Length: 640
Image (cartoon, rainbow, N blue to C red; front, side, top):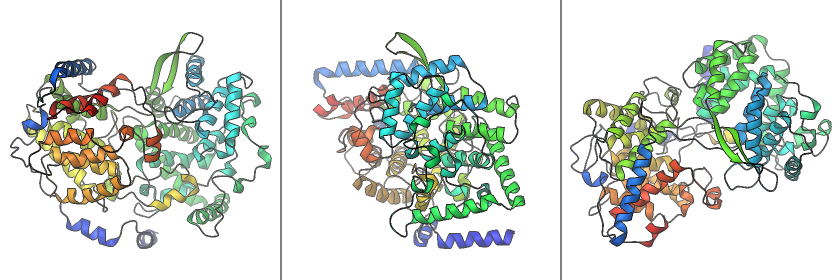
């Protein structure tokens, strides 16, 4: 069996190679240089003075007001630092999907809490759009899957279907094609309550777990967030549990035709393309073959696969922060554990549920009938990201590099550096632990984005224990360099996670199964190299600049990319900080570049939004700083 698996792995690598051999060879030839600095920066963990301190420019009568605004922003942020540990953390905002799913999860587990339901219902009602639906981003239009989940969660919570706002929601959903037009993950959530047929969901046999780690279609060939969601889901697919609900709680009214008359091969995601041969059609045919096998599986093979999925899930659940430290994976893991026979009072399940409950966010809104408390969920915590961004912002806005608050935050970041080998090791076998993750705890899944921002933050501090600081930066730097892909860019969590054929399988209708290189991350890493003192002759910079240029031509992630290029010491006569500020201020792309999200077209359509206070200060400080490094006034600084 072992020889057979090795043969399959070699064949898959030759038939479906995701990176040309020439690029792989070039990547192997380029060795990562030892950590060094340029620009006469003899202090290995600090920037030159002109890089970190504001240079007062001739700003006329507005200088005092700008200085005062910066001082007030600094004081506001310092007042919100965690005094015990030194980190900052703000709410990680998302749409209503997680709140709807949370209500569904508690109902599925039999953990109905009427007080929680009442507050979550108020939240869902307060976020409904005038047309009756719910969006997936602030200011966006109604989206079918988000709206279906919100409607179903409201009905599960006892809201009658004839309420005026429910009638509007139903009309909005039916206008978009009804439940059959919702996403695969929405249909899986509905199938758990017998509100959608498993026949209309792509087949996912647990035998996937038995494929070799380096096999083209193994679970390690997809992104971290997909992997942590999928493995527990394989257990759920094997057991197909159902929570019985009353007819009044069901959503038959959201189907455009009776469920028994639906021909699932004629609706997404199993509907074939019109062309005779496409990859999508091929995968649908493969799905049909897998269904045949699923009816009569090789029992010993199936049992072994389920056992391996269970072991993988338990191994990741027992770590701090929950599986993947992100809600969708955490919720799936609880259902999977119940499928495996774990009771609700089992310590592993209790721990998993407790970690989910920590993601609850309580607020107060006016729902038209007065003020009332609401409940919604955030997907995870973001302390490392928030803390490192704020260190960078505060230093560049003039706070001393050895300010006690910054040193405390720096010590906390040092304590969060990973020392454990994670899934990233499979695609980057030469890499050693040294990255940072996004959440409070996610030791197995550090990411390049957070690591780059942390390294920039640490590189701007003057910490008492300089040796420990330098060693930490060196470990993080080596990890980021080892994670650079064969195309010159970086993915977030894995190297060369770019097998685009995965996005054509029926299960991947959300289009987010992979973690490929992006110009966004290339720009971040270029900025990091500049902060650490490198110039454009660094081997990693040469390769990343090419990818960055290609991404810029496609208008993808424009602002971070240009900031990154500007951060490198590319020419004489212009200070490091000046280049960074002007790179942000004069980015030809509109303000859409400042908005989070993966689709440039979507970004351009997004209107300005009312940001929460912490996000507001993060976005304002660089613009205020730009006014202090300018050598002349420019009206665009006043525009923000």
